[in-house]
Image (cartoon, rainbow, N blue to C red):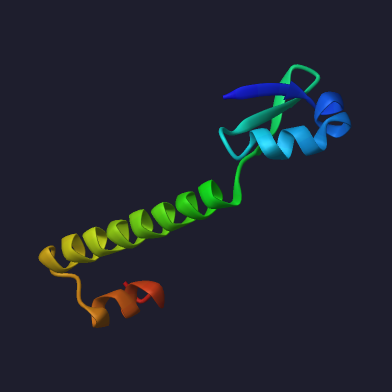
Length: 83
């Protein structure tokens, strides 16, 4: 991963865009990481992975809830604060 200052990123945007096709670039301002520049392909890969991971998490929680006896009726009562 490459690190550049915000000033350098601004002055060398075209070069940063090219470099981001090969690896993520961390942009720093006042010694703090403030942004990451990455290729559109890598961004889409990460979004797809996060979506799949979230769906797997939801499925796992649903199975655990069902195994514990949670039904839709019970869930609706909980959500309605009926106890």
